[in-house]
Length: 190
Length: 298
Image (cartoon, rainbow over all chains, first blue to last red; front, side, top):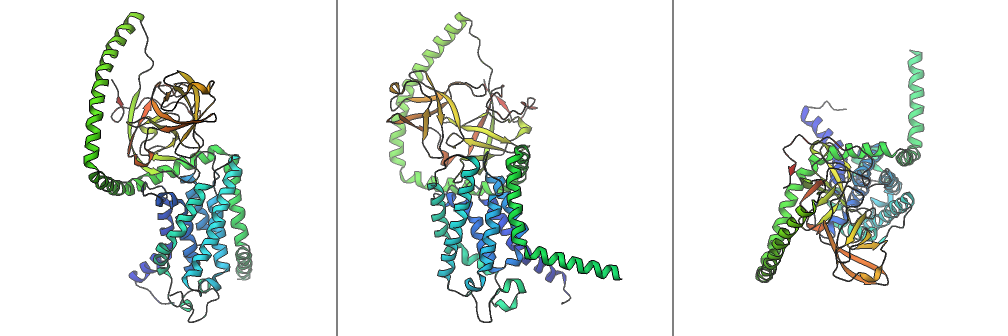
């Protein structure tokens, strides 16, 4: 272990806190009155995008309990009367688990395949939230708005994901054990 | 020394077990939270209100620049159609002037008749002006967050209006923030009157931009273009706030377009009608505000 100066310490803390902070920002952003057509309807799914991307890049800096807490916060802020609290938390935890289980594959493949991976995982997330909300409120809920959200966030993914992916260290061997996944030297996303 | 070693061994084992079953534990925790939320709704309400109160200053900081940007975009759009807009407004102005004359005449007549009949007016309404700091719009909900709360006298069930008409009602109230449920939300049920026929009905939202008229006695009487106003039943809403107009009557399904443009809301007024009755969540009405923000109407 190196002995660190204050600046290096701050740097390390900053790095450790970055994914959580970005996720918190996007959770709060879901409520921001942006009023951009289509974009604002997709805002509630952006945290799921962030969870996917950071689970791919640095899962050790986005631990499960943190996801649980932020998911509950999202549900509390977003939910109306009767909406289940904790369903986003469940979704986040499952996204992380799905990504971490397939990291070996996902970090090595071209961007297009990561996008397809996100399409599949996000579909699961939307279906989960819709199913639970329907069960919980015991009322038929029109699935079309949820589908629209899904389509918009899929389109947004290529714009946002490369930006979020910058937190990832270039060489997968130059990172802690957990975030290395099954990657070998030379297997980089870029 | 041996005790410490034992402790470290046990701690290590516990850590291994926790790591192995981390996913399962997290999933169980999420389900646990959901079940607690279902069982103890009061606790969840408190948590929601707390989260709103904590988040609303942050949201207000985000909302201001967003509002400026939105306004700039809207200005640009309007600039393009300035000439048409002007012609339309001039035409509307002449029409409104005619209405103004009629209104003045009716007001005088009304006053005269009221004094003759010794008519007692309902409780006077006071208004609390609020800024929209957050959208609470998702695939499952239509609502918004306001920057006013219990401190200035906002209570659950109060009506929220704009210049155009009714926007919704207060659903949750924090110390300095509150959540509006729009009339378009799937949980919204509003007692209304068809203005022309004075028929009572319920206006229900279903998360789409159009509202649905239900529990109407005679469907035949309603035509497209009829204005819909609040009926004041349930106690907490004033009578006669415009809500929308009928745009479609087919096969017994009557669709109503709300007057409020929900995509452009920036400021709203919360109407404190004095009585927070059956529509609220059962919370007692707060004492009248100490003055300042609440403005009593004439």
